[in-house]
Length: 110
Image (cartoon, rainbow, N blue to C red):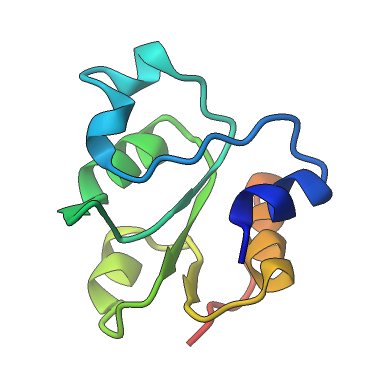
């Protein structure tokens, strides 16, 4: 699935795809502007927990999209943040992201 195109189809003005955390640079919040995010639990072999924590602290809405079966740790660390399990449809993923942006919580995918 082309996440970038799906986001654009749903009305996103700009989509930036990051395939590894080092692409964000040393100070990602100074170098990039984030309105929302779809995070894989791991990018380029590295955990996204610290980046997710910073998004959460800054009040930037996000969802996790992951193929990992053990999601309990993320559900505990980030209550109220949707976890969308792979494989997922573009519609399912974007509905969860829109809910996060709107500040509503939809049931998590299992």
